[in-house]
Length: 90
Image (cartoon, rainbow, N blue to C red; front, side, top):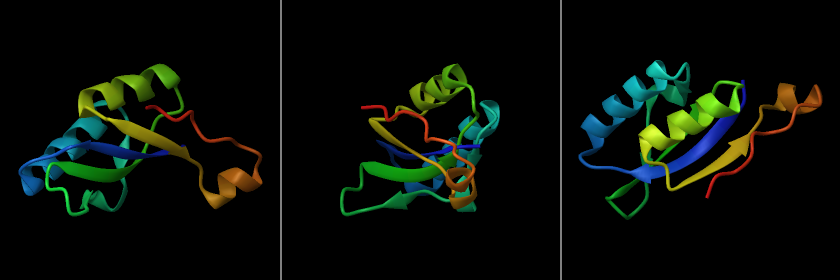
């Protein structure tokens, strides 16, 4: 399964992490390390999410998260097998 590094709105942090986890489960995705991350801006959170292969499911997930940016990634094994990351979303 490919990944997205997602930038999304957040507040409060603990509740948002729980919300993101539940949203991922609803869409067949998995929150990596069961955690979201922050920089200095308290209103923005980041998460590495293992997303479903289906682009429509990926888009539904990103929409429900309120993602402002999502950068597609693949693992080392996927890259070695010739797989390509999902497209980035602005």
